[in-house]
Image 1 (spheres, rainbow, N blue to C red):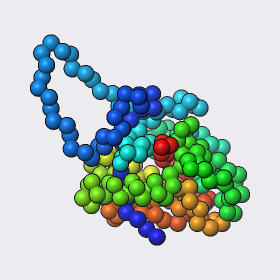
Image 2 (tube, helix red, strand yellow; image 1 turned 30 degrees about the vertical axis):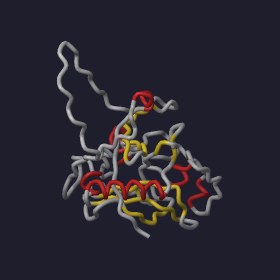
Image 3 (tube, rainbow, N blue to C red; image 1 turned 135 degrees about the vertical axis):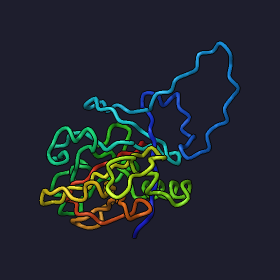
Image 4 (cartoon, rainbow, N blue to C red; image 1 turned 45 degrees about the vertical axis):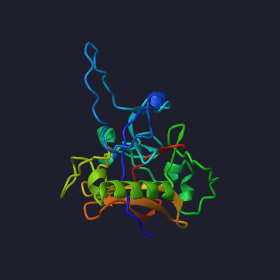
Length: 239
């Protein structure tokens, strides 16, 4: 079953107490207030989270009252890889994980239905306080962005560079890069043309759900992926 999806956001774990997370990047901008004399204007900084495990810093964004990472996860899990096995490419595209690596399970879970303890927020290898998106999370993102962008989901989710055949506007700040995926035989495929992100959902012994964004689609759609394929991972903050 396929769903169309759109969304994106940038923010910071250290500054949550100062942020009004009810404000969406798709909401109309607030009306400007009259200038006040002799008052130094406030500056705004991008919001981010810092992964306490390795010190990696990620931009984050709020879409429809849910807070997403606006970059692909770079956390090292044994066996995970960078694009074309080049460490520097991890800075832009993040790491590529099999489904078992993403959920923090043994490799056997790529060939068998893994009886995980499904909590409300299944962390896997996400930072503390964050979890691997469920299909419901992706559907919420898709529905919200599609509605707010009036059917321009793919356009507003895509980054403004690196896409072959047409970049996006990144109005959502989700900044989806065309990272493609790594097939189980070790080849990197569709780089520049599409991206896929893992969901926690298992379909059968060897497949799990992922959500794909490509040049030919209006937004993210659910696809069936081999668990042994390696995909980028976006985490979502626990409610």
